[in-house]
Length: 115
Length: 114
Image (cartoon, rainbow over the protein chains, first blue to last red):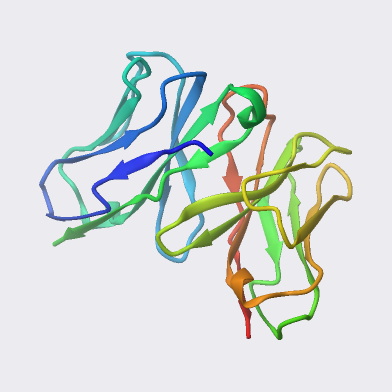
C-alpha cells in the first residue's frame, strides 16, 4: 500500500491570507499527482493533474508545484476567501505493479477561511 | 449532462442484510471506481473497472462485490452487511486508467449498518 501524506491536517486562516499545504509521496514509479477540492456536502472536484517534475499549474488564485524526484507537491492559495474553505485532497497515480491505474489518496487538509 | 449519479443517497441496514448501490455516468467514460470514505482515512478504493467487462480489486475489497453492467453502469453489492461497512460510498469515473485522467465523482451514498 502506497503512503501518501498530507500536512497539515487542518488549517485556519483569515480572509486575505495566503496559505500553502504539502502532499508527500513515494517517488519511485511516479506517474501522476492529482489535486482535488472537496466542499462540505458536495463531491470531490479535480483541480489539477500533474505529471512532470517541475510542473506548475494555476487556476485563478490556486496554484500547485510538483517535485517527483523528492516526492512532494505544494498547493498554494493566494488571498484566501471564505469560499475556499474545503478539504483539499492529493492522490498519487503510481505506475508500479498492481498500483497501475489506481489513485491512492492522502487523508486531506481541511482549510477554513474566516471572514 | 448529469455526470455521475448514485442511488440511494442514504440507507440504513441491519447487520446481515444485503443491498446494491447503483452508479451511472453519462460522459462515455471507460473506467469506473468505487471508494469508501471514513473519518481520518481519506478515500480508499474498493473496486474498479478499467473498461467494460473488466473489474479488479482495490485496497479494501473484502465484503463487497461489483458488476460492470454496461459502459454506463457500475454497481456495488454488500452481500451481508456489517457495522464496519458503515461509511460514505463514492462512485467515480474517468476516460481511462492508462493516462492521468482526472476522476469525476458522484454525490455519495451514506450507509449506516446497525
